[in-house]
Length: 134
Image 1 (cartoon, one colour):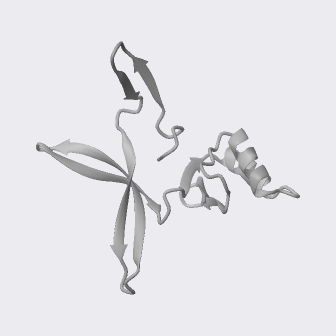
Image 2: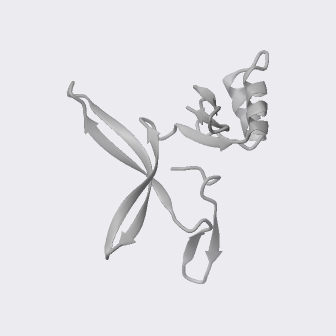
Image 3: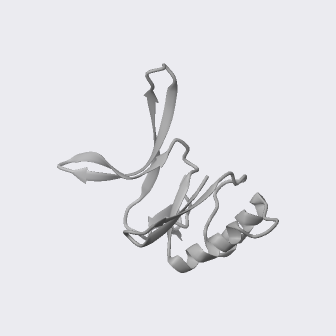
């Protein structure tokens, strides 16, 4: 499932029911699509999607493509946070567990137990930065 940092919710408790109310207005979830490749191999692709009602029918809207593993996460960050991330990544004697701990300290959730890859990307034409964690 996606991190609660992306989709914060709060719980309202009543006598008989527990209602989970999304703060952002819609609820998204991860959908897996399996495809058969030309080689005959089956490969899974993951998407973040949400359901919308249109003309009395449910339509599924893809919010973003997550890749071939649902644990690959992309976080948009500002330049200041990108500078902090680059300092963390290039610290002397850094280990995956230390990098994970430091990323969580600056507010970037790392959903995996074992950190394999961290990509810091800067797009000059758009002036935007993001981090991809695998």
